[in-house]
Image (cartoon, rainbow, N blue to C red; front, side, top):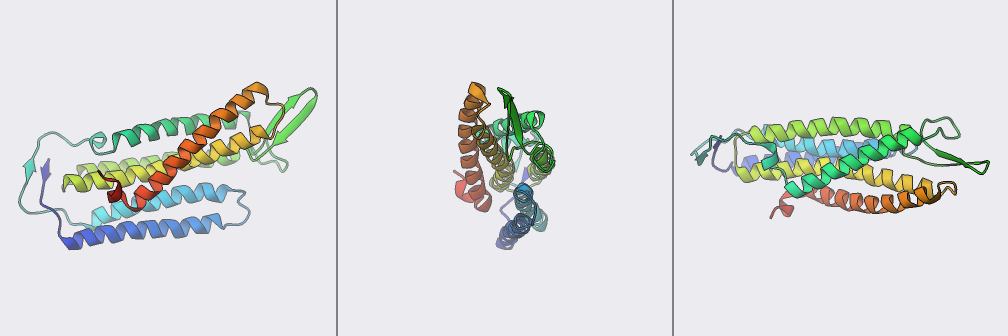
Length: 249
């Protein structure tokens, strides 16, 4: 694959403005979704992927606005570029683990969730012990889990397309790595933020029940560290999306 000289300053500015525009659009749309009435928290679930996809769209727009580099050829490697060679390895492994935890938690929540007092599927956790039935919510069951899983699938596909496009495009190697980091961080935000919310919500519902027994107590002590880990990852990814170059070594 061929790599060329650095792009002119005008192209760099266009790329930066496109990223900021994507972030701004994501923020505005997210705030609109959060303020939507009657959402019962579902607006936040929709706002997170909208913001992340806005960041991804900004990076891609910067790619399309920047002309293909021309000029003196610097290198001429014959080996094809691979996505895994451009994404940050440790962050990618962490995000894959968190995605697996998110899917496992949401699938489990769907399986054991119950309707709430107004009939919304999977929005409560109901248990019976000693002839007494207890119910507590909100619970990250069907009402929340299905939209979260759908947004995870769509955002993963969008980020995968963006990484494939960035990897194959001619240009400076460091520019590709910077953009790949921004896309990976956006995907991380789309993965870790829902995991933090789902783990916190599930732990809160379990703590609100007295019928969960030892198994429920153990689950709470597992969910709380997962929530903290995911929250820390989400914050790191958010700052990386805003300023990816600041996190380049």
